[in-house]
Length: 179
Image (cartoon, rainbow, N blue to C red; front, side, top):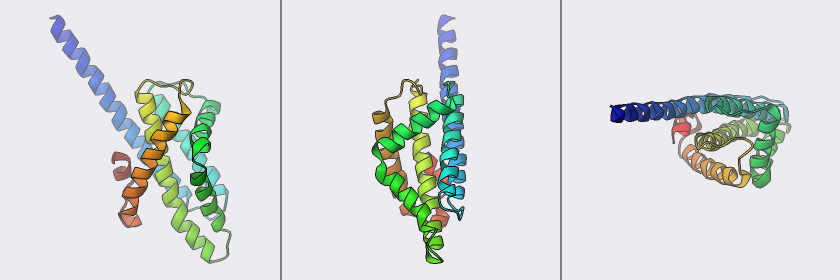
């Protein structure tokens, strides 16, 4: 009888973890697509602000899925410490892709080619890093920015490589998240 209760509890925990994984993947996929869409906004800097807001909202939802308390200030601080602390080239590339849009005619096309892909991959990698942190029982207060940054960079490189192997139109956001 006790063995049956333990087995039932194990199945319940396993189901909850699987449910968290599935919910997290869906949230990451949705917000990655939204961020890529905001990369198409033709106005420099406004696109980057919209992408950042999308990332904050995604992390808020991921925190909610895992029962983690997440105020706007904590999320903003966590994202800045992960993205800003060790990935200046990524941020420079994103801002540069946005600013390229201000160059007449050619800039718009270059910006439209670069920023959506960069925004989608960055958002997916960021979501995966935070989802893994939350899944391991971490919170925004207990996070080690260096560890999450390393996970983010590994995810970013893997997703970027996967995205570069397919034509842009053939890359499915769900595939990026599931990779």
